[in-house]
Amino acid sequence: MPHEIIEMRSYEFLLQVYGSESENPTLLDTTSFLYDLNLAYELARLKTDEAYAGFVLSANALRRNGRPLKPDARLRVVRLRQESPIELVTAVAVVGGALTALWVVLQIAEKVYNLPMNRRKLRAEVEKLERENRAAARTEWEEIERANDRRAESALYDSDASSYFDGIRQRLSQAPITITKIEIEVVEQRETNNGR
Image (cartoon, rainbow, N blue to C red):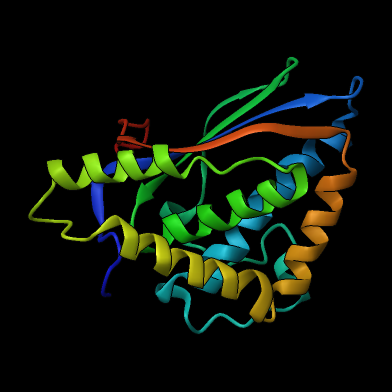
């Protein structure tokens, strides 16, 4: 896998999402918002991660259990705060397919909410990670960025998933919860209850 971040289980990506509500959202509004964010990530992961190259997208993928991701490829909730502003922090291990899938989520948020993607901060985080793990990760940021842009672009516009991503964008744009800030950060992996 040329020019990708190779697996480094001691680090994880944090996806941090902050939003505001126009009024008190219903439980359905809140769960739909969270579901669409997760759906965007999981579909992107299935369409861009080489580990899932055989995945065939169908309407079944929209069902709660219709996406065959391995448990460590799913987003884990680190923090969820329903107060205004809503705050969602999720984590996933730093492996080859995770960054591109998160990149797709960032691009969807950027389009729907006209948010600037914080590439400079993410670039600094990845460069720091590479310095600390020089033997494990010998990549250059520009190549990673270009490769992720190509994979994300393909998933969003050129694949059979594009209509699904269009639907997610449309639902998010009409939701009473709007994303005001979204970031990806690289951090050392925390120990969880199940020993990971």
